[in-house]
Length: 127
Image 1: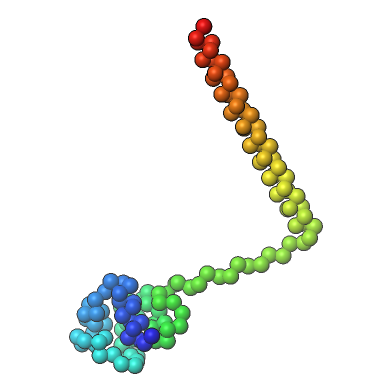
Image 2: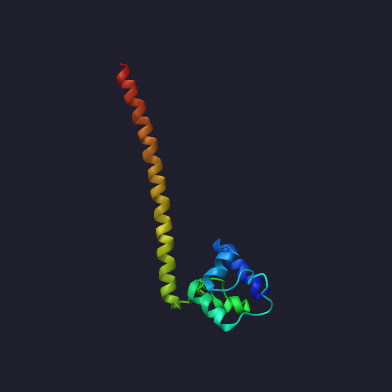
């Protein structure tokens, strides 16, 4: 991809016409269409001033992200935990999972109990 291609990609992404862009950086009509291999430093400076979100390093080389601040997420950091501490954490997690299962079973029992009570209440009203 050439500098011209990358510039056009940016303009399309931002919804900016070539003519709007050319006027904003002070170049002649058709500048983008006539671009060849590179851009003069003064033009790059004008682009950077008028379009501060554009990563000019990406524009010139294709390296990095198109927009500034779109860095790739950091790799997760590694945390070292002693074996004994890990065992305690693991036991606690297992204990919590067991308690969750017990709570679900108790809730099921209570729900069934409420259904029976509602049924009995209906019978009592029928008397």
